[in-house]
Amino acid sequence: MQELVIKNLHANVEGKEILKGVDLTIKSGEVHAIMGPNGTGKSTLAAIVMGHPKYTVTEGSITLNGTEILDMEVDKRAQAGLFLGMQYPSEIAGITNSDFIRAAINSTSETKESLIKYIRRLDAAIGDLKMDSSMTSRYLNEGFSGGEKKRNEILQLKMLKPKFAILDEIDSGLDIDALTIVGKNLTEEMNERNDELGLLLITHYQRLLDHIKPTHVHVMLDGRIVTTGGDEIVERLEVEGYDRYKEEHGITDESETRVSIGNCATSLGVNGNGTNK
Ligand code: ADP
Ligand code: MG
Image 1 (cartoon, rainbow, N blue to C red):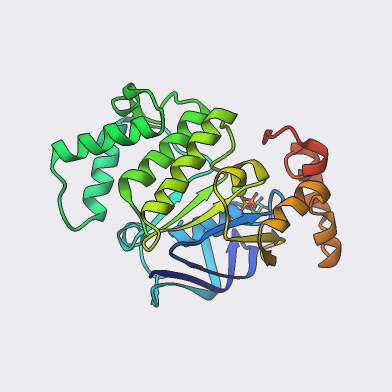
Image 2: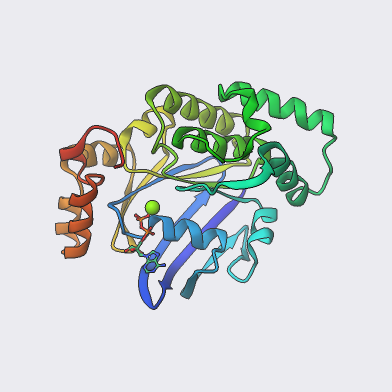
C-alpha cells in the first residue's frame, strides 16, 4: 500500500499566497476528487506536488511512503511514481508521441522494456482509448484537439503506470463519448492496479465522476480544503454551487467572484452546459 501525504501546505507564486494550509492524504486504491471554483489553487496544488519550480513552498510537507519529496527534482518525483495529467498539455514539435512516452518510461522504470513489448502495449492502450493509431507517430500534442490532448494524457498514464496520478481537469475538452472512454479506462486502471494506484481528480463537474467513482470528495476554496466527504458533496455542488460553502467559511473574494462570472465555469447551477469556457 502506498501513501501520499500533504500536510499544512502553504505556497506562494510571485509573492502571492495561493495555498493556505492544504491537508490531504491519498492511499492506493482510493480515488479523490477536488472540486472548487476557478482560481482557488487546484492547479497550483497539482503543480507543487509534481515540483514545478515557479511555486515557492513556504510551509508544510509532502511525503510519498514516508519520504519527503519537496526537495526532489521533477524527474526524481516521476521516478518515485508521481504523475500529472495537465490541464493544458504542452505541444512539443520534433518529438513524436511514441518516442516521448518510451523515453519517459525508460527514465522512470528500473527495467528496460523491449521495443516489441513497448509497441504491443502502446497499440493496446491506443485501442483501449479509441485513439487514432497515427497519434503515436505525430509530434507530441502538436495540432491535437483539446480532447485528443486529454486522451493522450491518459495514454501516458496507462503506459507509465505511476503510483499516484493527479489529473487536472482531464474532462475539459472531452465530448460525451470521449468522457465515457476516459472514465472507463481510469476505472479499469484502478481495478487492475488497486493496490498500486491512487488517483486525484481535479474537476468542476459531476459528469466525470459519473464514470469514475470517487472514494473521497473535497471542496477547495481560497487555497484550502474546506470540506471532505463522499458522493453527496458532488450532488450538492451541482444543485447549489459553491456559494453555501463560501458563506459557511466566510469567503467573500471579489476577484474570485468576477472570474467565476466571466468564465461561466464555476457557477455550476447557472452554467450547467458542461463546458469550461
Ligand atoms: P485553479 O486551478 O483552482 O483554477 P490556479 O491554481 O490555476 O487555480 O491559480 C490560483 C491562483 O494563483 C489564481 O488566482 C492565479 O491567478 C494565481 N496564479 C497562478 N500563477 C500565477 C503567476 N505566475 N503569477 C501570479 N499569480 C498566479
Ligand atoms: Mg486549474
